[in-house]
Length: 275
Picture (cartoon, helix red, strand yellow):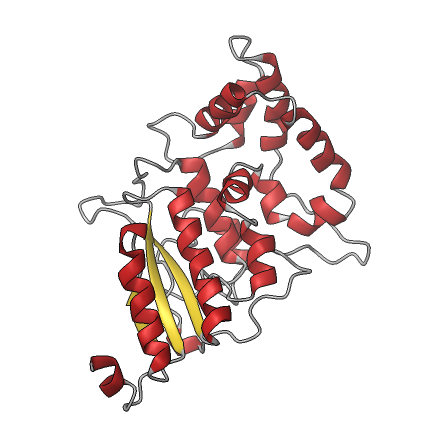
């Protein structure tokens, strides 16, 4: 009844939250009822870095892609990183997240101003074909994420291949240890290359883990060039959602561009000042 009445007024998009998988059933029911009543534009806020896991977040994002296709609607997902209001900075790391994963996801989101594109092909390319692929992407060296096309289909491919060759030799225990090492010291305010440099030279660490550390020392500020001499950007060869929400409908995570002046400069036209 409420959705039928709401559909009779000027409301676009309908704003709805999907903060953890425990509410999946009621969330999906609400989306289907909205579609049945002609509400086809929805803005979906997704809390993460709280009690969820990266896999939980991935499933929520993927569900919106599936609902878009099944119902012929348009749901824009806006992941919002949880930060306790009692903290004076945005340093909180959820129990099931780590500092490295949060930074990786931040870089991915910057390609579309914090919006998870509803374009299925873009989503699969940007976030992986399943939750395991998403976690593999989260632990990639940040240079590989930021300069994605360069390292996958451009001159940087040999470097990416060398990294993948080493990674294939990892056991399950070594993979878990890698994630632990990437997360950095618990008291660190950020992740810097000197952290990975120390790990690469630490003889107490597994030799295979030391061997992969130089890839994490690659700087996303490196002035990589394409054949045409133009600087690379985030996901340059990918087509984001062709139907993006209007500027006044975008509400970004206030911390999306935190602690990275370089990324702020590269995304000047995309950054909105938080009120």
